[in-house]
Structures are given as C-alpha cells and as structure tokens.
Length: 295
Image (cartoon, rainbow, N blue to C red; front, side, top):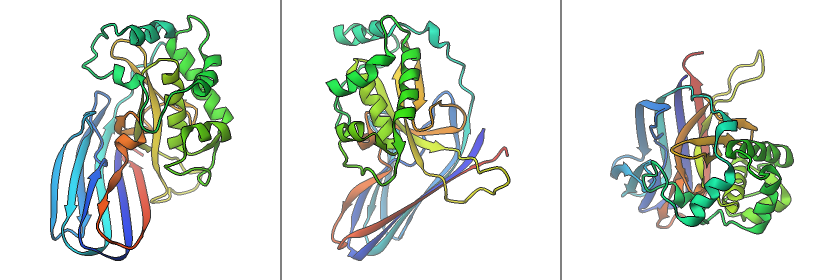
C-alpha cells in the first residue's frame, strides 16, 4: 500500500510567545516493511526557526525546533508519502513458550540479534508501571507452555472486548491503574494496557505510535482530516521477531497501519512536546489525513 499522510498540529496562544522550543516525532521511521518515499515538515511562523534533524535513542527520526520570534499561533505540518509492505504471516503456534522468553529476561541470558534493545522493553517506564493487577488481568491468556504469540493475541482480543473506547474518559495524565479499573479510554490507553500486562508477566513489549487507514462507510466519501493518530503494542516473540497488536480494533497489524515511532510508552514518542515562554494558556487542534494512493 502507498499512502499520502498529512499531520497538522496547531497551537493558539492567549498572548504573544516570545520563543518556544519543541521536540517533534512526526517523521515516520523506516523499517523492513515500511519505506518513506517523501517527507516535508513545515513550521509557521517560519521566519526565524532553528531546526535540527536526527535520530532519538530508539532510532526514531526526531526534529528539534526553536521558534525565535514572537508568535500567537504555531502550526507544525508534516506531509509524507509512505509505502507499506505486507508482513510475512506469523505462525503463532510455532513461537516459543512464553515462559521461555520470560526466563531469558529474568536470568539476563544473551538475546540473539538483540542489538542492545530488546531487554529494555521488559521493565517499568514512566507511564507504564508493571504491577500485580496487570499481571492478573493477563494471566488467563497465558496458560502454561502456551506459545507467546497465541497468548498475546488472546490478550489483545480480551482488551478489545472488555474495554470501551471513550475519548472523554481519560487524559494523557490518567494513571494506567485507573484505566485498568474503569476499562475505558482511547487507543493510547489500550496500548499502555497491553504493553503493561505483557511486561507484568516478564515479557518485552513496546509502545508503537502511528496512523491507521480508516475506511468510510459504503457509499460515503472519505472525510479529510477525520483520521487520527493511533497507537498499539508490540510483543517480542523471540530472536528478532516482533508481533504488532492493536487492541483498539482487535487486529494484528497489517498494511492499514503506518508506523511513526516506537518506544517504552507514549512519553517517549509523543508527536509534539516542548517549552514556551509566556503565552497565557493555549488551545490545541490536530488534524490527520491518511490517503491511500492505490485506491
């Protein structure tokens, strides 16, 4: 699948901001199943902006922005063309027993093809603390000697069944324990739940941010700007194999999903974060449009 993606973030301030500094995760990362054919990031106002592009600790493209002129509005827009390839079908039944991978983490055994990154996803992070409540929720999906992918898929389906999508139930600051208790939230919350539940069993899991192609009802046109940023989880299945799972939709990810970044939780890969001087409060609006070019 080929896509044209447009992500616009707009801040409106109550008074002039003399200067602002931002870290932006809006450029989609490349990996074996995804290629960025074109990317353009623009900033308004753009008269006096210092910019630096590099990779963060997790290998995600990031942009540092310093807007060094007074501004009442800030608009950051990324336009890109992406190519997403079909992933080889995973034989879930042939993945290792989940206890074997848990024991690799517990004993600190060498991990094949680790590259120094797999084990870091097995432990607590800022927004995803592990705990007995999450382990208890995950336990019915992970019976003894069950292949890890089968258990993770069952857990994903249970979250999809048990939790209600409610954009008014949570904020970025809502604790994971509260999300688990109330069983309401948005894709970010559900991604944190599956990641936290897997880690609470001792399994490495990472948080993935990106976009999801949304299909309009039959006979209806696509709504420009109606798409949203999306999030899901990914579980390590041994060697260099990861399985991406979307509990919001109860699906193993496919060519409908575009990866922007991954890390330990939302705090590692938030689309735009920063510091402003002044401003007297602000309003925020975000529009995302994902247009399939092959349709």
